[in-house]
Amino acid sequence: MELQNKELHRIVITAIIIKDGKYLITQRNRSKKAWPGLWTVPGGGMEVGDYINTPKTAGDCWYFAVEKTLKREVMEEVGLEIGKVRYLLDLAFIRPDGVPVITLSFYCNWQTGDVRLNEENIDYKWVSFEEAKKYELIPGILGELEMVDKIIKGRNPDEIEYRAI
Image (cartoon, rainbow, N blue to C red; front, side):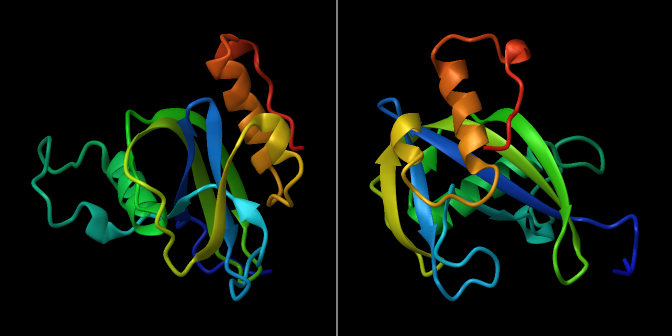
């Protein structure tokens, strides 16, 4: 596989949304090219338009561009407003079409709204970590849910090691 530009990456941001001790998972539309019909968490790609037409926050820079993208993606995909986002982990991979991707995974609390799915997803569930094990999740999501579950149950995040389960 030949990479066109080894310095460019697609940035994808995901949110593990917590409400009443449960996590929102969504089932991807069966027409999706990657992981059709599998379960995941809301998120999507960062676009220059997420910040380019907004006021710069410091000199020629935009602070909180990733957070703004995540809030937009969550609103578009599931119709929810989320609270403060907290960094969980990052993941790098190469898509089958040769595009390198950096995924930034965050967790946050549900703030307002009822789930309203867009065309990217066909179903949703609020699940506990144990219940999530019953769903066919895309690779790595169960491990991320486990990490967040331990964090909200009081484990020190520095003591939690990611396991791709």
